[in-house]
Image (cartoon, rainbow, N blue to C red):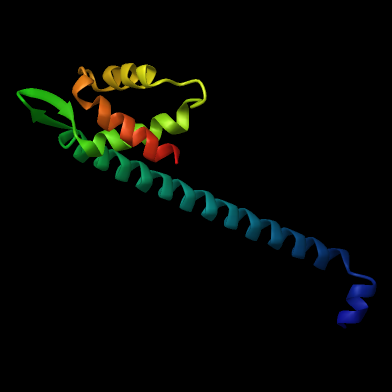
Amino acid sequence: RLLDFLAKPSEELTKTWIKDNKKKAAAAAKKKKKTKAEANKKKAAKEESSDEEDEDDMFEEVDGQKVPTDKALKRWVMAYVRCFNLDKATTKHAMETASDKFGVDLKPKKQRIKELLTEAMT
């Protein structure tokens, strides 16, 4: 029977088979899309909660002045290295960008920023 069908498939069975496969494919695509959306929501929620936690740990007081923690500086340096052309970037540019980002003068942390940049580039 199978060989007879394969040799000359009946139109009715072929239509049924195609229709069933389209339904299965649509259901699978819908499930995949739903799973992906849920994963994106979870990721966004996780990042949001970690950002809230990190904001608390972003600054420390040194000599009565608020400065970014080492952890915050490391994170910023990694982002800086990914975003800027390091062949043209200077330490002065990095210091200005970091000062703008954190909203404080980072001259006391200049040496540490240089060290972190060197580590990130090697």
